[in-house]
Image 1 (cartoon, rainbow, N blue to C red):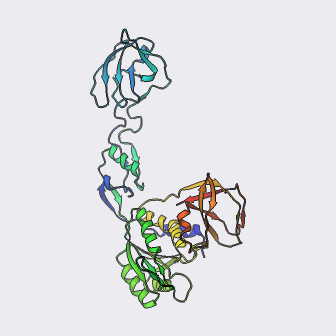
Image 2: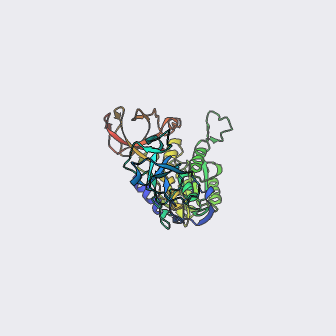
Image 3: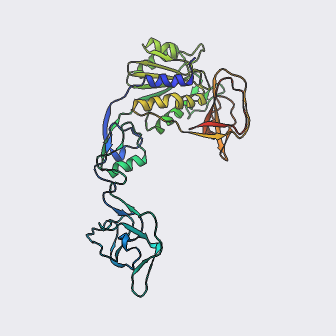
Length: 391
């Protein structure tokens, strides 16, 4: 067995970068940038008001001011302020070129007789957004390898990048193994179970904006397993299997993969749940064999497969983690494997969910993440801060 960290490191080491393609920025959500993006303009591109108020020369701040113009966002103005003059201005509007202060509406009053503006309160800040304050023309604003979120889409729009170069998505196919499995639309007999793993994995890929294909259920038969894996391993970059990777008499996946010319990268991880997790590679083709129990397959996808798939697309996946105290004492029997415990968060404290083991799929419905318990740790006291890996 190898450690969790070693498994993740080996998976990333064997990742290969895919090709690139150009797409519309409006279709780029969830994709990975394959180029640096520089701004084609200063942002802001002119000095603008940060508030609704009155723009003036600061040297006139104690004088009654005459309003010479009202400027709203988008107006073209060439006004030059003379002494004791101001303009009424709206947020985002361009300033007169010699204005250097904007008084907020609420910090002013209008003389009802003269109509002049009096500044009642002066702030230390100018309430002006200056040209190039955020970004200078030509400055890099996004780097290759960036995962595009809604805010990156907005950034691309702001600099006029309507087409962008992104990394191609890997082609992925998912299959389950096991004579006991039936598809969800079937009612299982007393010796069968519905296939939930494959659909869980399909959804996990979909959440990454990877639309994986589903091959179906492969029977626990050596010849059948060989023919199915030979068929699906050719056209896809990544094959993800569940079940058939342990040490049982009918676990044919590891030996079949080797017959197909794949080299086993690892086939066992010192972790609970998810010990029988396997990775194999042949040229630029990879097969992952995940455990048949649903909690194990879910967690091992998150730990090992997800960062690998992101690496294929040129992105370094960063785990979402927070530090919180345990709500209750944690007790466990001694083990030489790292334990990954499903938890939920209540009142900013970590609470272990009811969990009966790696077949207890429904524990994941309540879980918001996992905590990692190192080997041979049998007790953690309430109030101890632990690292929560969020799902």
